[in-house]
Image (cartoon, rainbow, N blue to C red; front, top):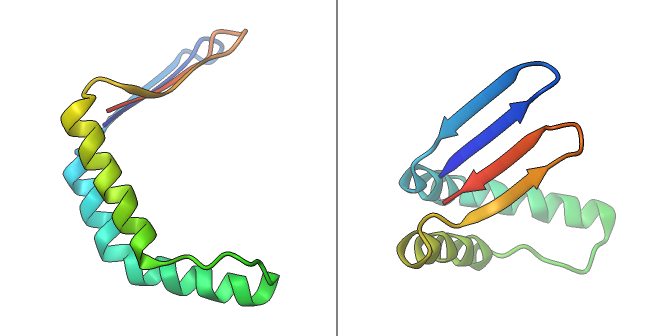
Length: 90
């Protein structure tokens, strides 16, 4: 995954390359912590949505599918009027 941020006003360019394998590994490792956080927040805010660990598995499978079938797809492609650009590419 490649994240690109460019700002014309500040002459700022940033390119970040993150392997999807690292993202999926971090999601798997952080799954219990994310679930615990959402369980705690739901009790406080009384929202009717429960975050399940299956949701993270769906996100991981979706990322694998995008990498396999749609390599080069832009998830985010934003260009503002003043020339700022933000792009996230698989």
